[in-house]
Length: 460
Image (cartoon, rainbow, N blue to C red; front, side, top):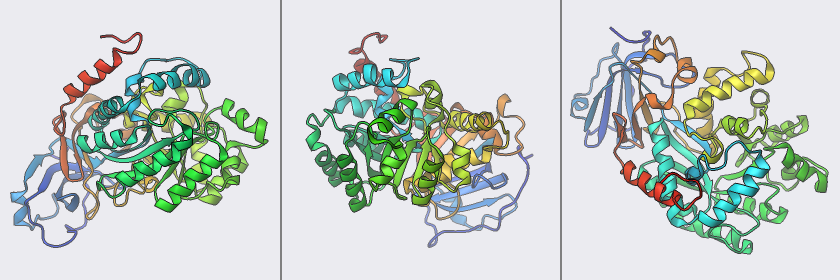
């Protein structure tokens, strides 16, 4: 008997030329969630070829391909749900080292008295590589297949993502004071250019990008130079903006304007600009974001923990602004579980508006998949249809907190990262039966614990 409500797909669809099963995965006897809004499909199956979804079907269809029995890997999905991999649109992965180091502080104190000093002392190539790899492990284990990262020594982070098997938009940091790897801020854009030279076109799973820290840590000419470089190189441009009331005053006092209006005046807002946080916006700010088609990424858990406020996400979506979802770094969350993020994202918007229909579970799921893919420029990612990239997660639904299952709203309000059993990224089985196959996670944790011994208060 099927575990979930029954539905059917249209007949089997193939993408591309006839399939040769020399490098393929067949997942069958599972429930399929193809897109955030589509009905669940009982007794479904999915076939990959190389890095691509080759075909999908249900028990109502016949599998007309004798080659399917010769798939490289065959997975019985009884009691499982197959869904698109989640996408984390904002993270500082290497900050796993600082998880729990400075909790329960207001944003300015947390950043200037704890995080910036810790970064100045402890961030180096070794730290960024191992700690980014630890973040990759946490994300893979909780069903995230792609991440947008922003940090220093970003080449080391990019290599960690390559070695872990993750897909990543890796953005090199820009800031106008001495930073890890860039001791003289006069060379900050040169360092970014070197990073882009190294990583553009190097690996199909890595998209290099630029991350300007914020309008209060970067001079106007630096922001314009970074944006110009992003435009010329055709890479995404990220910036923290309007995160706190303190930031609002820092911009308003000298400039007499808001952080968003400051960016607009500098010519930084366009469809390739991704504004992170955007908690403190007024109606004019919202109009500017919509007019210039700039994207926004909300990090609700981080906003709650730092008491930054509640972003007007539902109002942004109503205005046609693309709104994505991210976790932020471990130092201000402290989890990288996107299931938890979707849940709190929807519920805080209901609380903000006192309207239970303000931001639905389906919308939260869409933000964490299709919308994030669109914002980050990850083409053919975020849904399970033939011809799309094979980034998939398989959840174990045979659990009390996931019983019964009527529809995919359960994934937002009841599921958690620990329910993910297997993960496929780019057509490669990266995790099976909760065991990461792409690298030694225990070895990575040992390396991060060793690095943590240099910080005060760490348990050895």
